[in-house]
Length: 369
Image (cartoon, rainbow, N blue to C red; front, side, top):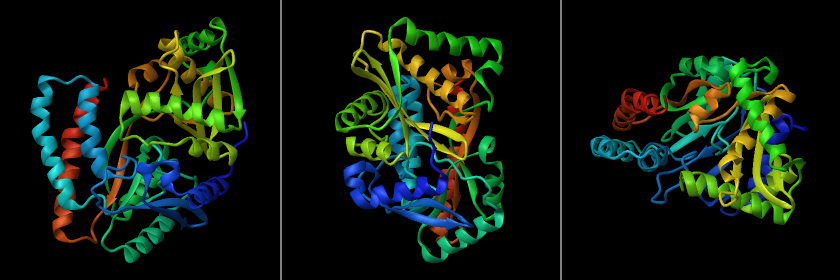
């Protein structure tokens, strides 16, 4: 499996966005974006404003902590509990608006569900870039998403040293950095059982696929069925062009699950310094074996990470399923710096952080365990 260097990946990403524009790649990711230097590394950034339009949760704090949470209540089937939880949620929405949370500059943000960090970022380099961003964006909060101690302990500590404060975002699953054969027996058995389904049902994987237009359209359809249809309209709405470009530029590595000549599943893997994540995943919900396709696809992700010695970030969702197959739960945070903002916005940001830490955090653990 061919992977790009971190520099080539971020430059390819930036070129893609500049050439086509977000309106043609994912309309609800439409904000200013570009590259910024941390030491000798280039990382992407997003710069957003408070707008009336509902943007994707990966670039909009308002969507993440208000619109997305409202949808989650319906997805997990809360009934009477929802009556209790809605008033505090409305209160969160109130504070979010007054804090102007979407007037924010986010460092190392691709706009994908998970941001991976290049290795070797030093505390001094973080201090320099944060100081630069603060001076040039005095009315914007400064954010860093996708920070967890399992993978980013040094970055977490460096950001705390720069004046950032952690705000709980979600629980994520990290997989051991070792071959499947070294997993605990019970967890290894689950993975191998899932792998056997592919052969039993006569399916086949196409690996390292460079998508053509027709395949890109099918990939977009399968992704939409899962992430927009089953989960949330506030997930990124990627177009076929996005998948075509990410494949042909090798920003993401696409693998296709086929039944005969029909594509019934897809995974798109991103790798940064030997850490993998899979922002693109989808399968045919109308297939006769739809109930096992997710098992087959996630087994393929685990096998790929095992074969190429990648440390795997499995994002959030289906937490119990992933734990049974070796995933270890880690808390993930959005790091927030607001000390340069007005007292009124700092106050509201503080209240939001308090509710995320003291209400959202325990509720997430309760419903995911």
